[in-house]
Image 1 (cartoon, rainbow, N blue to C red):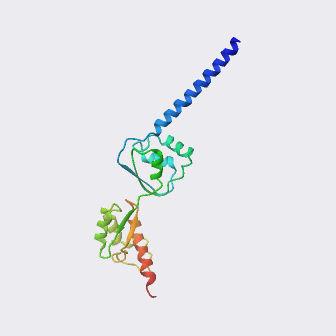
Image 2 (image 1 turned 90 degrees about the horizontal axis):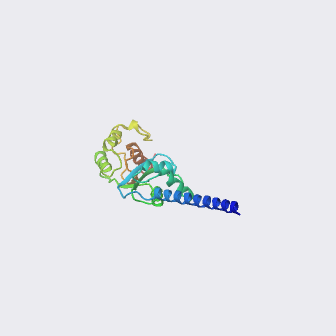
Length: 196
């Protein structure tokens, strides 16, 4: 009877020890998932679809304490879809679920470019709104060979060909993307309607 009791005692200790280990592991994991201190938004940009672990690493320790634990948390809850290309602002102090929510909606800047704007004024407006560099924009306007203008002639400048409209741009993007979007609008709304 003594050996059986001893065997049961060892088994009980092993079970209790294993349970304690699991509980300590869960407690450690929970602390790794705690929100960081509230802080300013960290801006990250992904040019292509990106897995959550890479996105969490890009956000850094001021937003995500432990990227691996956060990615495991997302996988366990079936929330680990890749992050779509785009620019994202995520502040510190958010729980993991809210961080994932922020990584589902890219930042978009809506900018109205008035009809009366010349390229220099448009460049300042774009830079002021955080869309792109004014200098980069003006350099492309002055040298149409650097962009895919898709025009049936070779313009010497893009001045007057950049369609005024309300646009949605990603923040801090390349000037080339902005110019090409304006030229696409010009081709669609002006050239496509012009008589042959």
